[in-house]
Length: 481
View 1 (cartoon, one colour):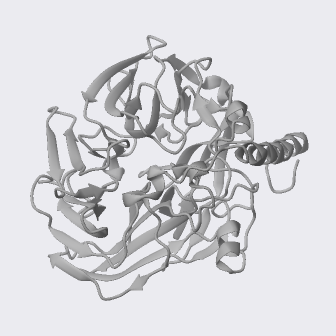
View 2: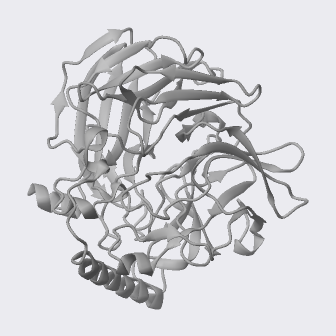
């Protein structure tokens, strides 16, 4: 067994050799790519900021709820420099976290900080952070969560999580309270009943399996199940119900051809890879997975999943008919719609129905209902090939009604996070928090909406001293009671 990895020596040796080969071939191939200064993911709302900022004198309009005591954080790509913009891919930019600290109706501070991976620390002239490493691909830019009393920046496919302090500074690398060197997930799901994190994890260098991993409330590794797959599928998100974990094995897979052609992200649409959705019992082994066939499609994000009374499993997703066919730098041309996938135990196929045809992404729900039946889903209207104003949608899954909030004629919100007013609040009794970018003046705000009236005026707006580039995921980290 390779020390500290949990992997056999021959697997670890193969993974290391493959990683070096991919890196060498990719560098050689990229030398042949012609320079092209145009890249939408380095411009406008995606353009990186160049300094770390701390500001304690923040202007607020409206009234911040006194119940909002905690830290709102969001992470995304923020490259320090880009020698050849033609080769830059949005998914691969070094991570930067942005945060606003709220307490007793006041906005105490705003901070932004680069995630201190080794390449970033070298570029900034800073010492490396302690802790184990997993491979040389050290970008950490996709999600940020609170767990086991600490703040963690996450990515999928290779690098370990990075622990941050309460002021967003990098502390160390590591798999929570474990010493293992293994890839994790950008989208673990917290079971509100147990405090455990459930995740489906893949590794860029290991293409014949994915792992179901459970991290305890104390940060310890509780469970690991290795599930055989083919072709190395990209599995960005997963979900859990009371009984099972949902595995999305869909036709975006690792491509050595993409590496040879110099594409920075080595994943493409694969017509040879059958699309399927798996249900792994939370206490079962890999041979207990039940697979359900589905028409070829792809989903980055699951809203929620739950066990229905009739014995079926309901999985709500934002689904794309195809993705990663021609895109070289991000998600241009992608059209995601919200769908309900029903997995009937009497059949081996997925029944698909449309919740909303609107273009949308970054779906969320009340996290207290993760793995349970729920009523409201929130998403952002997104068109990656057309920069312009974007709304927030609230989907009433009981009635089919869709409420909409327009932040302004030039405004683009990031993922909206629901925060309940108190632990026993109703599902729409609370607030929706999101960073919002203003195209007209290249500025950003933190906007607080009333979740029971999402189409109404903002409850409060915090004016930020720095622009927050459009990025990926964020969360509300409440103060300890």
